[in-house]
Image (cartoon, rainbow, N blue to C red; front, top):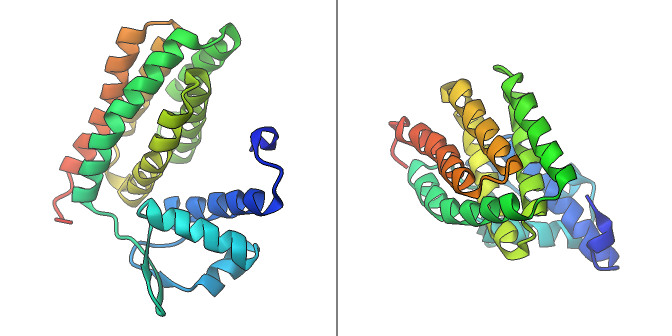
Length: 219
């Protein structure tokens, strides 16, 4: 995390760190959907104090990761097909803005990084863990290249929900399609092809939409 741009307030910094720890545990399903947990348990789990953990909980609840039950605790929200359909509907236009600006504004050094990620994706084969790491790196780099703080901030929790969905249904993920879509996106942004990059971004979302459509269980 780049702390240079963060306010010089230790509480805010700790709250961000607590958020990142909890977000990771939610996305990787260490905190399982439907699981009930207390604030005290999350304090113990993260190693942070009550104030930063409480701020992180509030943020995650606002983003739809936790459901707060007054005087009873917190429930990790279920992974839902219908919810994911709405998330993808919201995510698609935001990603278009980001990749369009990234293709136009990326520096030469950033374009080299994008090309490198595209190559690494193509050799990641069927390693789900490697793919998720590269996908996260690609998202962070696209955000940096785009320079649109508001679009990046808005899309971040939607990406978290998508990664959680991937983990939950990882046995259904067609890795070849997913890798190809993300590699193509990185390559086109690196080439300054903003029209192609927008279409490639839609292609990445389309892979997720097909995964959602393949889930028979209503939710």
